Image 1 (cartoon, rainbow, N blue to C red):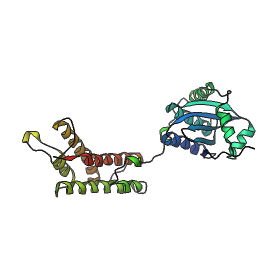
Image 2 (cartoon, rainbow, N blue to C red; image 1 turned 60 degrees about the vertical axis):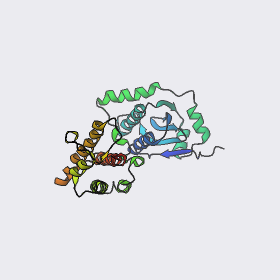
Image 3 (tube, rainbow, N blue to C red; image 1 turned 180 degrees about the vertical axis):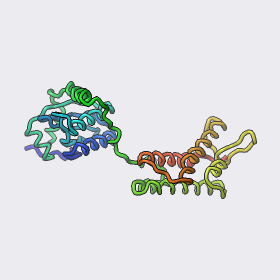
Image 4 (cartoon, one colour; image 1 turned 120 degrees about the vertical axis):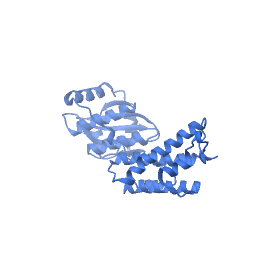
Length: 275
């Protein structure tokens, strides 16, 4: 008697959108995806994805019998896997086996049988894609399916609390990060200045006037260190000053990019050294 496997992670729902997002999630966060197997029964499809330590079953939110969201989503899923250079094969399974998948009851022996089957094939994968591309004659967008999360492992610990709040109020997190950075640098050089003039005093030298900044970076020479300082000031000026003088309306992805730019300023500040 085959017991349901405890090693399989079932992701997605019977809805196509959820299943595509589940595949994108695996591709973004799984350490190593070894291969993907499309399990097909009567034009219904699901995905068995073998990772480094985990096997994922992406549920049956895909179809391929006519132009529909299920078919478009199926091809989007295939293109996501192709983008990541994942080996993809297809295996036709029985109605009984498909019903086992519906019940989240695949056993370890089922998985091994699927992955090691000599009847899996690759040519049909390209047929699914080319057929839909021909019928639609338009590109399918797939970038938006990746998780829109900040990479917390890269965020400076001094603004990690703002990263946690980012989805609730991105603009507030960004403005607080700018203000906090100014406070850090103001204390660092014992200054009462604000904004870009504060940053210039801290990190930018004027060699012609024989004026050296109190902080620099481990760089090839003074010119290279000063270039980093100018980059620091210009990044701050370009984004912070805009917010100081007008209301800023940006998409969520643009706000994420701005927060990551601020995070880079924090990293550069941390790496600067006193002369």
